[in-house]
Image (cartoon, rainbow, N blue to C red; front, top):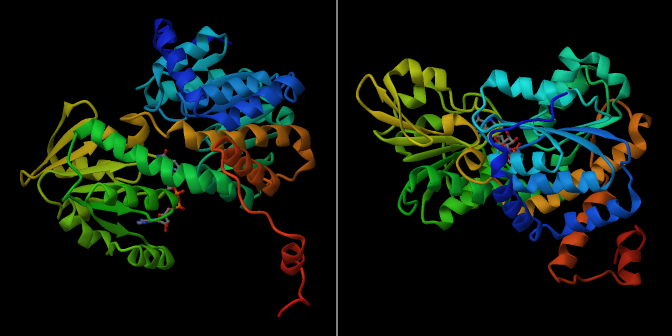
Length: 418
Ligand code: NAI
């Protein structure tokens, strides 16, 4: 097994500085790290982590290592790696296999290399490790106690596997912890998606019509941040309850075929394929900008856009210009990959503090329970979820109300109705 595949080890010092800065904004994870240092709950456990290689992930890796784990880290997206972070971790002896801008082929080579650690636990952001193990490395399954999954798209894939009886080890859906999705997906994706778009384009949001496709946790965050900057936000969703929520939140709601005509900027966060496709490109305004913050680069039908175009040019970093046959121009950001990670730093450390606190505690949980669990997708135990919230509040210096004995009794009784 190689020690690492990274861009440049000389970037390590810069990475270390940024990791340290993030650490200072991740107090809950630090508390867990200290506990892990004392108790060593992961001694001798091999972990493959297929996560976005960011400063926040580096802090998770430090916490797991403090607990005694041996870790191999690969990127969970070819464009999301922060090369200085990969270098910093490699310089500390952690096995890292990730280079920003790697090809699809290199991406899988890196994941294959990471799997050589022979994992007992797999961590995913998008389920690629689990998919690879279940398709090409069945021999590893006997030693794997379980896995953890970080994002909505991964959880959807894994639930589909479990429903077909294809999942061969238990997985914790870290994404579904309330202290993850309510904050990471909403506030993290909301802010960092706008940051990515600004970095790539420096456009003014005020006065623009911004179309947000998908009004789930991520979409709500993106829509509210775009509105906060003065954009007129249009929401597109296929689920009547989400669409209704968007209406009552004060947004215009319409199908994409209508939104396509009025939008200046389009942001997809559906976790689905082809939310924007041929018939939509055909009616878009000249110079419309399209980008994606959902997990995979399938939400915008890029092959269809290519077919409609007479030329495609990389006109600046992270901006491709598609000139259609009728001369309209459509700009695609970050090749349709997660714009918040490809063109900005991804989620802020304050929200990743909670997501990765859940990850770290879920790793400990799966290590303890392992194969006593069924080959299903489990939610993060509610005690862990509440503990993470409690620790975060403490770190923020916020005290909350507690139930009196009378109130507690009232809430647990059916006889005390009046
Ligand atoms: P969610 O399930 O809460 O919301 C998705 C929404 O999209 C739902 O309301 C659904 O009805 C809607 N939708 C599905 N197909 C659609 C279509 N064709 N057109 C319009 N709307 C459609 O999921 P969540 O948590 O908001 O995640 C969305 C995506 O973002 C996933 O791929 C997830 O993995 C990813 N994600 C990305 C992050 C990032 O850093 N950029 C962070 C967290 C999640």
